[in-house]
Image (tube, one colour):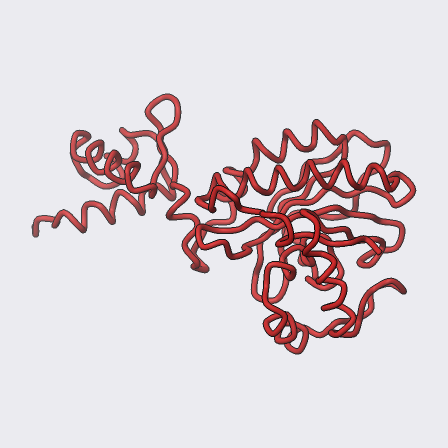
Length: 261
């Protein structure tokens, strides 16, 4: 049997992290000695490609998860974000969503129900547009105007409610206001009677990869509450960005914001 090179061993351990968490299980999965696996894992931890948790368990690290690749596991990103999402849900009492960018649309990868008497109709796996959602507009606000126009040409700007912006120039003027605050608001633009507040999550290069939002029925969110929820959402998005390897100032003022008007 051909002996594995050091690189092959490191690759085997990294791939095993997609399936196994415990040191002994990773060793069994790869067929490598526990001591060898432990050494490789420590090197991966140092590089940011793995993270050690309690009980000698390991998970994929922020630096690896932030690489721009379609093989990036949305479940791993959702798991990293979950503590922050749970905190936001508890503080706000609203339904919380975490969505990932997938081409010119977003996909919900996590959802936590709030404590309100009603439930939101959204579900994990549901896709949503960029031009009329809180997370989507927060993402677009991170992009240059020329790129926003390209997205608009590719995806279109279909009217989903009477409040949806369907003209690229109007949308760009709106995004200019978006960039003056730290969160975005969907004011019944995606669904009637629904208001959402969201902010973008960025990777290690400061590029938007998705975002987090809170959602309520429109009557249940006052103007003052929008500001309060916006601050909560912005803090949560910044914390998630940092957790996946984003810059310390993941969401500086003027980058992922919007005006509800």
